[in-house]
Length: 102
Image (cartoon, rainbow, N blue to C red; front, side):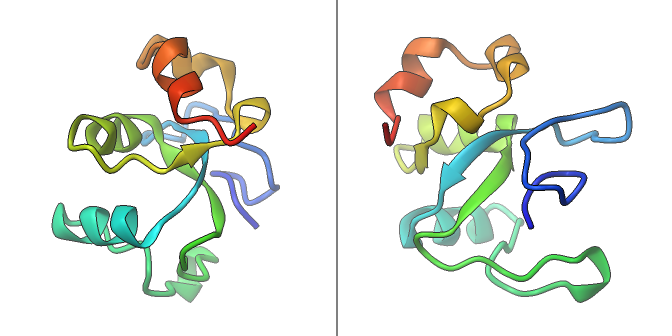
């Protein structure tokens, strides 16, 4: 179950320091990129209820990680309707729309 609160929603709160706001459908390219910058999202971490991701999975990503991947040319596609509105404090709607699945 995705989201900081593991409730299937890309919502946030004061304890969510990473700001898990962008609902993305991850790709092999993004997973490789994320691993290369120190965030291995492919390996399960059961103690944090993290199953490990594979290409095609949807997951709530940290907005700044998504922006970093976008700037590197490997941002995953975004589900706009499931992305939290406060992501717009960090990335433009135009950038999100350019990567939209819908």
